[in-house]
Length: 120
Image 1 (cartoon, rainbow, N blue to C red):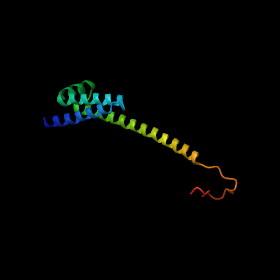
Image 2: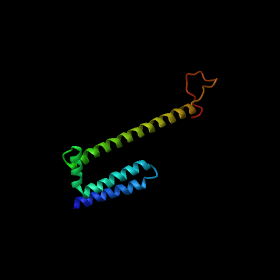
Image 3: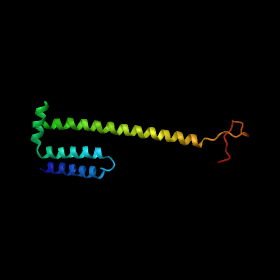
Image 4: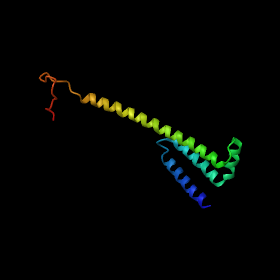
């Protein structure tokens, strides 16, 4: 009973967090809420997880939940990886654009051998 209460508290906090982040990422918030509600259901009715696991050919309900959790975790990691890659590409383009804008054409008095230190 204590374990069920503890897990329910964690799942409730997850739902509150997902609801708060709904404006930023509505699809992710809905998926998190659905997963947390399914978690609530299986925390309070674990025999249904065992029944469902037997229907899909997995021995125990805990194993089914663990496998589903691993798949969701891998999808979340993939999503984070793709977002980080896109952000890195944007930063790279911005840095290149700024470098080109800050670049100065060599002056006619400069022989091209030294750096222009007049701005320093």
